[in-house]
Amino acid sequence: MRVLWFTNVILPEFASRIGLAQINQNGWLSALVEAIRVYAPGIDLTIACEGPCGNDVVIDNVRFVTLGYLHWRYWRTSVDQIDLERIRQFVKEVNPDLIHLHGTEGRWVTLPECVWDARPVVASIQGVINGCAHHYTGDLLPSEIHSFWNLPNMLLTRWSVYRGAKVWEFRLAPQEAQAFRRIRHFLGRTTWDFAWTKYLAPDATYHTVGEILRRPFYDGGRNASTIVSHSIFCGAAAGYPLKGGHWLIKAVAALKDKYPDVQLRIANSQR
Image 1 (cartoon, rainbow, N blue to C red):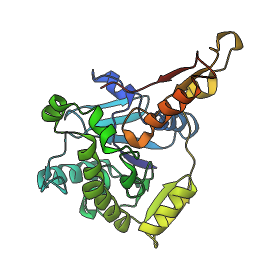
Image 2 (image 1 turned 30 degrees about the horizontal axis):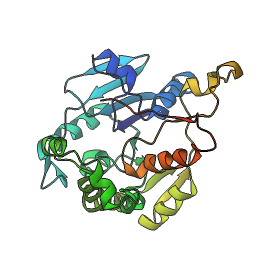
Image 3 (image 1 turned 180 degrees about the vertical axis):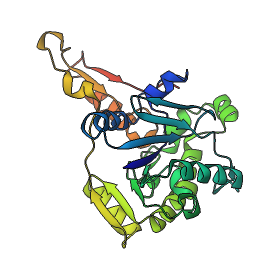
């Protein structure tokens, strides 16, 4: 069976092979690749993503391909026709039995049906922008947002918390809602996934499919002798206000009187 994935990130083993920095994001994808190699070696898997055009390598029987960077028109609401044709030709060359789009919040779900050429398509739900867009600012007050306003960075990157919230609400959320109306099969894990699928695509078929974690989560263990008393580690709170890192900091601050030695460590991927 030939399966073609479209992912929103370059998986670490592929990045390492083509000389790019490895970023441990979407770790369940790497874990799933490893599981397919071990438990379903009969699957002919190709993984495509955005990245420097021309990289096409096979690593342990899995093909990894970068398709260049998509060019968007009309404020990122449609993909350039040249890109569409290039991707369509790539899909035709792979000739998959199934196309799997990882994430409804990314760009791949926006591509028109002509790209898939009548092949079956399923999309995994990684997060639902329509359910999160109104909470992007994490209930921060304007005064709190302005307190860490970095004007030089905003001018250079054209990015701020307010701009992020607007992009989510007025570009990504409508784009995702349209994708839900077009795609007929979805993979999800939670009641949240199911409820939003039925709201945005009531006629689509929903499949409950769990995810797996990277090997260190299963192989690792806690050693009582190395535990730091009153220490807290958080691995998913630094990306943007929606993650709630500021609420965690406030909660830890409230513990200082009773636990003056409390420590908080927040990890974040570096690009």
